[in-house]
Length: 403
Ligand SMILES: Nc1ncnc2c1ncn2[C@@H]1O[C@H](COP(=O)(O)OP(=O)(O)O)[C@@H](O)[C@H]1O
Ligand SMILES: CC(=O)OP(=O)(O)O
Ligand SMILES: [Mg+2]
Image 1 (cartoon, rainbow, N blue to C red):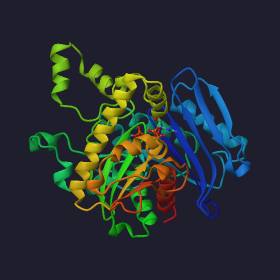
Image 2 (image 1 turned 30 degrees about the horizontal axis):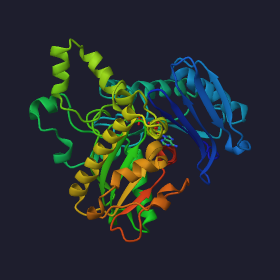
Image 3 (image 1 turned 90 degrees about the horizontal axis):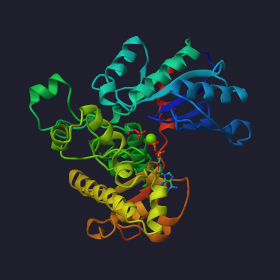
């Protein structure tokens, strides 16, 4: 890395999306941000915002069959602003990698052994690790000379106590197959819990926070003094909350029942629980905006899907209140958590006895800043704290390559 190479490109490859940011770490400015959605569908859409070059959004809708095509389109957009991947100012590319297993718990410069390990973990992150791998391989092809750094969703949760991480199943079987709870969205839970402490004017060591990361994938975590002590996702990102297309918690016997009595294969059940369940499975829509619109029009299926989503969320708030003993703050984040006021309101409705309440006016306000939405009198602070996985990944990537 040369002394004037201070830029980091961050790639956050989701199952069907690619979010990216180009940052200059010398001063911490964002040069470009963007998103490719609906990768693999006929009308993939790229929205690119060149912040350094005036900031006028550019959009492209065209078929992008996979993450390789999406990343090439992103590279073209960056080139158009003179910010191409060939720039000598680029110091590294940082990749969000969802599953790092037991071995990969720190930001890591990617070599063949790391790639192999990420690949080995594909069965336990089937929607995510393949996309992450494609992103890494394409970036390596475009810039073979640059350090590529992986930052793992599982990392923040790796300090969970054994009694929270271990499933109550036969120990030998579990250990032989590394079956345990890993947890995901860790980069977000870490960032948001720290930002929440800041919002309270305290050090992370001094606060207990429940973080509710509600995006398309959704997870809750209990963070005690800056350390994750429990989280709702498990071996894979399927456990826990009701999500856009994933069921979250179910009785595992549902699977055997469907295998034995509905003649479904394990592949079919996997697809059912990961892609055709959650809000989508319940009402045919996975987008909270659409669900709220339907509820406003009196749609009963959408209303029931919403109630099921909220019921699960409230159970986790209660559970993590018990896990933490003392809760200083509940932080809502990610697409739904940051934007859906009705979700936040319903999640704590009637929980004054637990110290939880939201102020209707504060909850309805819109802002990109972290903010408190609970009334003065409430014992627990309820807050909206926007996540920034890309910034967190850029910081960790740059710290690693410049050390
Ligand atoms: N204005 C909004 N109101 C309600 N929900 C929203 C709004 N904007 C986004 N969302 C929800 O956020 C989800 C995407 O969240 P995001 O954190 O970007 O997810 P992911 O990273 O998993 O793709 C959408 O599917 C939608 O349900
Ligand atoms: C781990 C996970 O569920 O990620 P996402 O929310 O991006 O799908
Ligand atoms: Mg996300």
